[in-house]
Image (cartoon, rainbow, N blue to C red; front, top):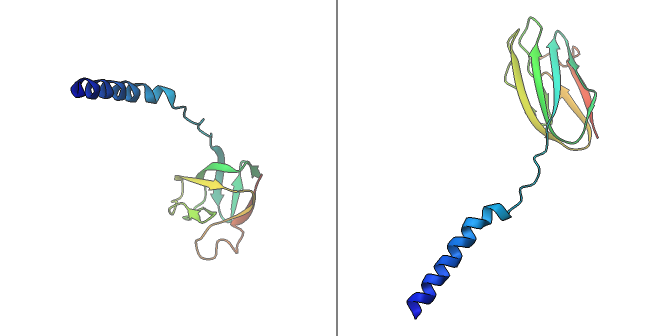
Length: 118
């Protein structure tokens, strides 16, 4: 009798586990906002002045003649050679977010700005 009860319990557990993934609903994936960034001496041009809070993907192209990088909200790209591109994914909260080029002298020369996050 104990063996039959144990077998029935195992069968019920196996069926429950097999059906569990179908019963679990996944939250909808949030789509990231994409911002195209052009870097050149000595300015950035962004395709958007404001973005909604959440995931933002910055696609940075260096159209200048010197290496540049792009830093926002504590994250930055690697150094981007002239003609090359880099991608940076950041999760942003509401408010104004400053961005800069961290190459010495570039931000004071104009490679900086602020992005509005709503």
